[in-house]
Image (cartoon, rainbow, N blue to C red; front, side, top):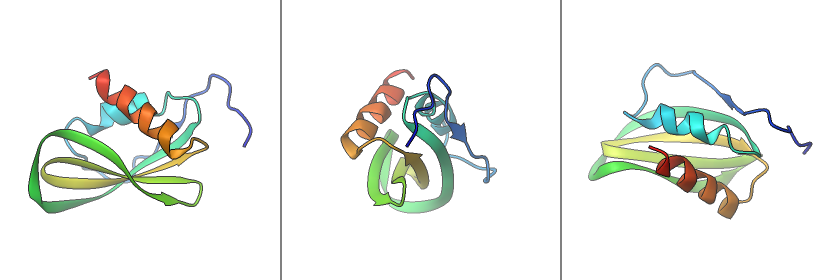
Length: 100
């Protein structure tokens, strides 16, 4: 893929609800070189209770990865189109989470 230079990625707004605190993290993530598009998707109720907002890589998808964001008893899928490898994306996510 061609490099975008210093342009940031795109955050897709196709859902009206998001996990509390997730959007600012995704806005920081799209600033990372190699991250092209971030799309928050389905919210789901889950059994376990995550005290703090967590974001982890779930599975590879064509052109990127599916992430799972969790907070409280709610989880949200997030799709990332990126040229980054999984370890590089995990580092970018960790960096985005630290800036809270």
